[in-house]
Every structure is written in structure tokens, then in C-alpha cells.
Image (cartoon, rainbow, N blue to C red; front, side, top):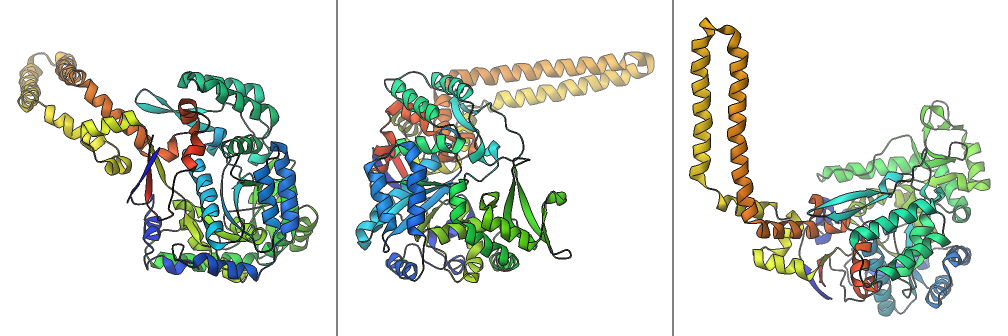
Length: 544
């Protein structure tokens, strides 16, 4: 593998400005992520705060024991207990078979930045991956995309769920999943690495029944020697650690919403669109109804001084909700506003690894953090990686394409320019004239027949449409003949587009890691992770 840098814009304007650290966005953050001494400055702030290190480490050790102990994992747990240690953290939903490639990129970013800053700072820095297991949007995690000729097909895992279950609480139908995975691997085709890959997936599936545990098992297999720690935000035992902080959120629900809206107004003044849907009376918490098996978003009704769900599906006084936080915290879960707060209360966060969307929504939380007397951690853009296979690179060279343009916009413009160069403009004009002449001739016939045989007019119009359709059919056939003649070149455009800009999206949002594991081996991720990365905001092009 070989790595090189490209200067590409981010997926949204706010994140692009953040990569350049312009004055339009820097006021919305407490730290400049690429400032030389930013992490030493952050360590000083962390030293002034208390964390439940022992309880947290014990929980993580208990949770991760189900995946088998490793020496590196145990070392990371011991590091977390040390009072001077810090963590680099990031999270993602538990996508089937790890979901889109950016999940892998995020894990690599967490691990590599932790290693880098541990060596620079001389203190233990632990990589932590936060699984968003409390999310209930199953449709976002139950599918992946696979290449099929010149497009990507969406393969949906066929297991159904009812209601808004947290992903953590979804039990996988092992037989159904096993058959689905077998069909998927067969679609990719057997290689010298297929049997080992299938064995790993089958073992993870047999050993773990929940959606999030299956996800975690695969991630830990791919990063087994990294010391990566994993937490599941939907785990009941973790919620016990969060009990006191749920109380703080309930007590300050109004101030949290006011701080969020105030910060959003500041961002709007700079011409940016807000990403968090803010409601003045939001409690920024969900209540989990075990009877309905779904999460219910809570709001505060000031007229009744009650916390309620939609259509008053649940109603609590403040005292009742505080009692739930103390005695049954597993019934509460965070939303997009309070999840970062909870993460900050639990972990000594040296840096948070975020994607373009996360960078934009963290900017809206600055005043929320300040309300609780905290600074947001340095928000570090995750590594944006595009994998370039050798055959695709050959196609790019032969077509004379610019790799950066192909990653940003795909090949449609260049392909259309190529097709335009093949057009026989005289022939196109002849077809256009023929259609105009046919219309003129039929117009004359209709005019003459209107008086003598008006009953034939519908038949004449139908006949006119048939003749025009036949001319258009011949025109299309000639176009198809030209495409067939140049099929080899057009296929190259399609292959490049499929590899780098599938379905009009970045590669990392569509492709899944299983394709590469099947083709290049289970150590593919380890080799990808071992490359020399700089957190400089540049796009990483990896040639394989």
C-alpha cells in the first residue's frame, strides 16, 4: 500500500471551513485542533476534573470479556485507571458487517491519534470506540451496498423489527443472517481468503446474539492488536454509571435547550444552516418503554410542569423522572445533544474524532458545555480515505482523468464529453429535420381530411405517433451502436465511477470492508491502519 495526500473539500461547507480553520467557524469551538500545544492545554483542563475511572474500567472490562481477552485490551484498561491518562474517542452506529467504510476509517483515526499523542505527551492515551447502541433507527444499520456490474445494489438484511427498539436490544436471527452472509460472499466470488473470512463472520455470529455485539466482535477482530476499547451506549450497566448525570440533565433541561438555541443563532449569523433540530421545550432525553419496546422522546410541558412523550404516551413529574434516573437509569437514554455531554462526564477526552456532519453539530453545543462549566474537547476531523485499486488506477490513466475530480464529482462530465466527441452532428440534424417534416406533412393531411373524413382524425394522429416513434427508435439504435463500438472505453468510465463515486456519493459512504477483506485478506485493515497518517485535514489516497 502507498499513501498520498489530496486537497479536497469536505462533505459540507461548515466542515470545509473547519478544515481550513477559518474565522467563520473557529469561534464556535474551545480548541484549535491543529494548534501545536492544543493537547497539552487540554490535559491541563482534564486534570482539574474527576472521572469514574475505576468503575468505568471495570464496566469496560466486564463488557469486553464476552469478546475474549487480549493482552493489548487489558493494557488499555489498566491505562484508563491511571489518573494522568486520557482517551481519544469517536463513535458510530452498529452497521451490519461494520457498515460503510467510514466506520473503519473512524476506528483507524481513533487508534492512530491515540498512539501519536501518547508518544508526544508521555502519558497514557487510550483509543475508545463508542457504539451508538441506543439509536433506534434500524433502517440505517440493516443494509450495505455491493457492486453489481456498473452500479451498487442495496442488500437489506431481511430481519424485521417492530417499533423503535434500541439497536442494542435487537437479537439477530442467526440462521437468517448466516444465509444472508453466505449469499453476499457468493456474490463477491470465492478467493484464497474467502474461507477464513467466512469462518470469522460465522464465529462472531455464533458467539454473539445482539446486533451491537456482532458489530463489536467484527471490529475487534479487525483491530485485535490495537488496544481499542469499546463501549455500547445502549448497555444497561453503562447506564448505571450515567445515573447521576441523567439527574443533572433533568435539572438543567431548560438551560440546555436555551444554550443550544442561543448557539445555533450565532451560527446562523455566519450564514450556516443548523444541523440539530432544536425545540424550546425539549428534554433532550428519551424514555425507554419496555412494554412498547421503543424509545420515546421527552418534552417538557411548562403549563403542567410535566415531562411528556408524543401524544402524552408517557407523563412524568420532575420528581418522578429524577427517581427513574436514580433507580432505573436504563430507562433513559441521550439524544444528539446530551450524548456528547455524557461522553465528556465519563471519559477524560483528549480529542473527539468526528466526521463532517459531527463537526457541524458539535459547533452547536459550545454554550451547552459552558453551562456545565466544561470545554468541548478538540474536535479532530477523522481521516478521509479513498482506496484506489490498481486496475482502477490504470483506467484513470488511460482515460486521462484527474483523480481528485473523479473522487469529488465522478466521471459523468468526462464521459459525456467523450460521447459528445463521437456524435455525428449531421446525422442528428437529419433526424431532427425528418421529425419536423413528418409533423408538417401530417398537419397538412389532417387539415385536408378534417372536412371530408373527420372520423379518421384519431387514426391519423395515432399513425403520426407511430411513425415518429419508429424514427426515434432508429435514432436510439444508432446511438446504441456507437456505444457498443466504444463499450471498452465507456466501461472504464463506469468502473472508475463505481470505485470512487458510487451512486453519486463518496466511496467511504457506500462500499463495505467485506469486499476488500474477501479480495485482499483479513489483515487488509491492519495494513491500512499501519500506514503513516497525518491529521492535517488532507484527503488520504491509498493505492493497493
